[in-house]
Length: 367
Length: 79
Image (cartoon, rainbow over all chains, first blue to last red):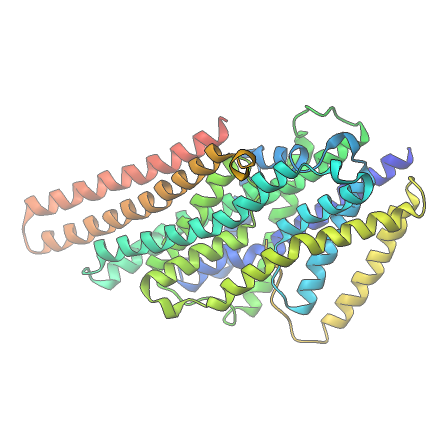
């Protein structure tokens, strides 16, 4: 086994851990609406979301292709660059989780890879058109569209059923949420699992294991789908324990509208290969459905947090990715740097979690 | 310059598809609920014609919801 193969194994393992934590973090966003409106019991909602997350990963590969081919120049990328990018993303997610700051796992991942590529091969390594056109602009547009869809949809709903008796209406929309919740989990699986697939594929291309024009290998699809759905499942138990403090109160019609808005925007974006922050899109839908009923019902602080996440996450993760690549390079091109950083990372994680369990739990980072 | 970098056509199609799917499906589902609720009320009031009409509206809207979801998934899986 060559040094590059060792790094590749580390990259695949790290990417799957990242995918697991992505599902773990995002369970709340996917199931909160169904749980808060009592459309589904929490345990059922979590298991249901995990199944649809898994299925969603098989629906499309457009986002994986974007991450693998449209963000950085594959010709100058090595497995170590991908590894450094992943470390940048994970480190930023952990730092924001520890400090209770909002973050986007998706933006962190892309920022980390871009930063590491820049450090390794300069500006030519970054496909700026792809980053701007496929990542940055859709990242701004998508939550706004979800907000608009949420506002318009809930106003139509209230216009149509507003004079009906609330009992049958609520029962109907709760039933509808079984479908809309499933679609939202499916959408989450399609977009978020594919980012990991894209990163692993990028590493495989960089290592020469597959050609630049090759499709995403099936074992990569299965692995990423399993990692995110397991993360969703295990993250759900944690959410169930802490429920009641973070769940937004809304009626079933708002829940249905918010989930529909989120699912529609994420699935449409996935179809065209736009890697999004799914949490920001879901938040946009929830805020839209909330604002459609009463503007003051919306937690506008969340909107402010999203803006902060937009501004900070990409450059911060890029800086960490670049620094990680620089540190790894001190030990040459072989596997010593990544192995050493992995060991340091495991020690740092153990210290963080040991300290964290003694303190109140902060808000999770978002996807 | 931005217009040349951004894949404008894809982005516009994404926005349009999101608006149609998100608003259309939600509106259609609210018609399902409206139709079912009104149909039940009309049956109770012994007005069979109106009950049938409301029921038909619910069925048609329900079919639209199912068709829209199936269409969306088929489009995504066949690209």
